[in-house]
Amino acid sequence: MIVLFAMLAACAPRGIADGGVYRAAASPIYSNAAFDTGRLEGPWDQVAAFAGPAQTDCRPGGADFSAMRVSYRLCLSGRDVSGAGQVVTTGPGRFAVQGSDGIGQDWWVLWVDEGYRTMAIGNPSGTFGFILNRGKDLPADRLNAAKEVFDFNGYDTEKLVISR
Image (cartoon, rainbow, N blue to C red; front, top):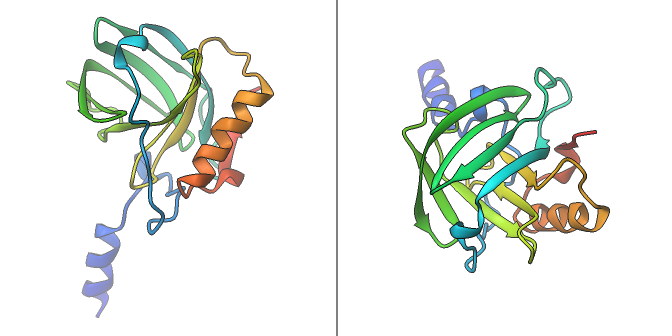
């Protein structure tokens, strides 16, 4: 019986470095079908991420996209995660970073504002979610829009930590 529980626990979705799961598994999740990866170019600051109350071991990072490549250092689930590699489209509003051990899962763009200044990124397993912004100052209207999209996609927005 103990072996069965251990096997089931090993199959459960885990967060980045066992940080947690932040969305309800039964909830549908949708990526942005109109997302244009060509508009990613340049630096993005991380302005929020999902984390538990005791997960405060790192400071927000960011991502820099250039010629369909990205290098990033992000704070996910309270831990530094970094990587770099080729951005490869895996579906509408979805991409993988090839050549990177960092996150290890596709990035789903759940929402991006019309001017490509703010985007909410998550994944189906709910093991990560974060907001990238062009600059550290995130206006309240775009923060609220990102929160609504995370909520719509089954994320527990009470666990969204805003960088200040």
